[in-house]
Image 1 (cartoon, rainbow, N blue to C red):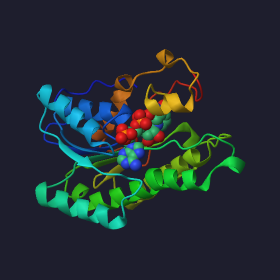
Image 2: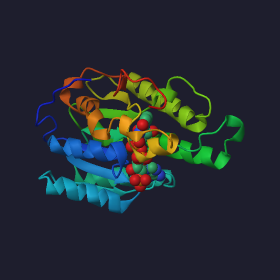
Image 3: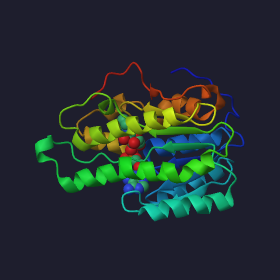
Image 4: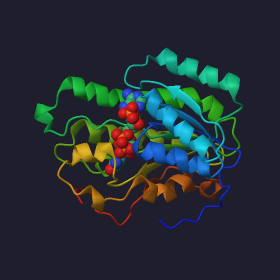
Length: 252
Ligand code: NDP
């Protein structure tokens, strides 16, 4: 997608990114900060989040908030507490990028381990739902809030061996569609991004023999991430976008 965002596209906006310590989430957080946003960085590994916050500060961005939070294990009450804590400290949330995700095992359904199934569904679906629900009151305080989910091509068309990851991404697309139908775009817009094959640790574990140099880097797919967080997308809701529309799914 070609998109030329204004330099101050996100000035004055408060944006939460999950899985902000690595891969696409890290790059999205840095990119949003460069366009003026204040970041709330949520993820599993505190040192990685602190490094991202440090980089944002070094680049002259607004101070970022670091929230270490394990999405695979937190009980529902922790999400409510997090929502209450943030509400006490900030007036609103202008954007939430639900980016954190787990791949799980790439094996035929017949061999899928129930424990791995449960863990991937816990992070990719249940945690995404609970965090979104906990953040809704703060999002609805913003004037044009944007909620973005991270999808995948296997969340639109099932593929052999992609088991729980594919099922979790179908669920993510469904969550996006239900929420988009519950709110008018002007109140809350809700969309998905399918990044397409992107050079990250998750991609490398899915396709260990692939030549990673042939994949786009997270930095090269940021246009759609910016577009959906800024006001240029204010009328778009209920849509599943492709960060790389011309790319065919599968190995590079
Ligand atoms: P990475 O594995 O590189 O990064 C995932 C991030 O999620 C990490 O920061 C990780 O934390 C965090 N995370 C994982 N589990 C938890 C947890 N239990 N609690 C909190 N945070 C957690 O993935 P990508 O950047 O490649 O993927 C980002 C999103 O894009 C995912 O939703 C993925 O499904 C989707 N996607 C990616 C594609 C690709 O080619 N890369 C293609 C299609 C979709 P930590 O750093 O601590 O491990």
